[in-house]
Length: 581
Image 1: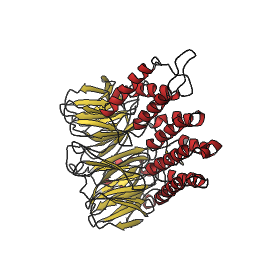
Image 2: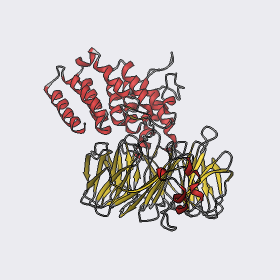
Image 3: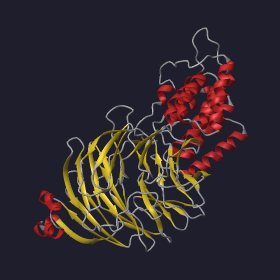
Image 4: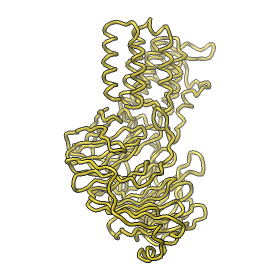
């Protein structure tokens, strides 16, 4: 596969999108427009055909191949890992902000891989995916099936399931409140909150596009819909808020960024609108676009998505099998790349690299831009985009509200209800309440004169919490590890931390380091074993760079005098983590 790239620059090109392409090049000085055949920065022979769209994230790209393998390469072309599913795959690959990867086999097994390509879990679902998985602020998975949406924790526990009024017609779209939007047959816009609350809005006719808009009030979601006649409307909290600017043609894609809406229209035009003034800021043409070749993000189609629109602080980008084009935020065309022989839709990375799979079974990488997207990250991974506020219900440094009597019978009633919800996989809209109850019991602090909470109940609460806890509860658990005096409670809190599988702010690793500095740890082998297991489970789930830090902590622990059994366990943990690193 060969790529022809055309670069543009200078203010002289500001009006090119109003003119035919040949006119633009006739009047543009040669110093501002160059057309040439570009060689890829690197290429990799795969021995198999790429299916679906490559997914670029965390300075790497993940691809699916028709031989059942999932492969990951760094942005420099280094092969990082390959996982063989030994099955044919559906053409959807999804990557969470922490770098974990999710794919589904044709036998309906949903497979989770960590960022080092190690299998975390596999669950067989009742139906195949109807589009890519979307992710919540704490890493939870929104999984679209034909007539329902499931929500899983990153560890593979099902929080809730919501049956839809009609089958999904469009792929799910993340909204600005940590939930998802979607469109079903019957012209019904649906919105699912992180806790599984389903809201519906019946449209006047069948929309051609659904997209998310930023909220104007706290806890109020907003979405936009466009119809085939070019008219659109804004929906807020399930009610019509007002119209969107009318368009000359139906839109195929839309992306919002800081009050501006980028759209790609069916007539081949890219348009940037101001949502505040409802005016067109600029429009530009995609020269290689042929009407009818672009396909919307519709999960009802069995073929791969044929085009994609990106909009970030660098600019607006349109990607298709036949080419890609980039515009600045002010409408100046930066570059244009024509692709020949692409087997799948290309992907454009934060590092300015375009990845494309060829029909010759080769992955091509083109370094198109030097600009790199600004991302807020730490040693422990990407920072969440928002918060569900679960840290508040777990204390957040303040007192609890004492949600019930501390009589043991009352506590056991609460614990049994939560246990039943866990077994039925129906945590749902009670998730926040359950966190408050479990954190209250686990912490064990009661007002003077109240009956003390039994140690066994505190341990039971932490055991339940570890089964489904959000990553937003990591600060509470880490604080409990560092302030608690009961070693059995500390051990169970460590188990819960290890099961969560991520540490975006480093609270868990800080708690681990704190324990390693405490002399009492080395006099309690059970507690030391719990710490070693928590470090191992957390780091094995996350992979590098967290696993590198985990190796350092386990080495420090292994230098102490423990029984031969625990020493051998730590050695096994170290060997596995070093493979991950």
